[in-house]
Length: 251
Image (tube, rainbow, N blue to C red):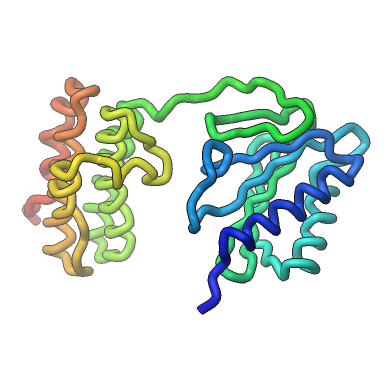
């Protein structure tokens, strides 16, 4: 099995930065993601972002550089994520190396979070948003709990598992928020205290069986309610309804 090395990632970074500095259409560049704030580790992906100057377009740069990446690195274009006028294009490079390439118009190029390191050119200052609110996380978890039970009643157990897992993740997100850990994409989950993680292990769905689904959902709901101190009034208001979702219902 041949996986990418740190040297492979560095070679790709150096090559792409050489394209940027040699391309008059590119007026600024930065590293984003984990490698913007440290060296990363042997599993870190590569995230580079660039500003497009007047007279060129994001679509034009993406098309040209995608051709280069495919020709020189046999990179596979997985998907695009547009955020305003910025487009993030995700590639898979042989060796299981993920490369995220993005372009923005120069007037919009800048940090949208703390993991941004300017390499050349200028960046604008964007307001940096905080973590999702406790009400949002709790409300989302309550929504997912409803959907999990209704899908179970419909016999759609794969979909029910999707929603029940979402309840657990919202509970973990509330715990991360309370302790000042990242709530994004599960990044803070592994840094939570062992007691919190152990209490939510029982919320894992172990099989696609109705009774198992209701058991796991009940544990996830209990975890969601435990972690809702920031919105305790709301949690207490809806707790009787949420607790019904893992109990037998009269036909």
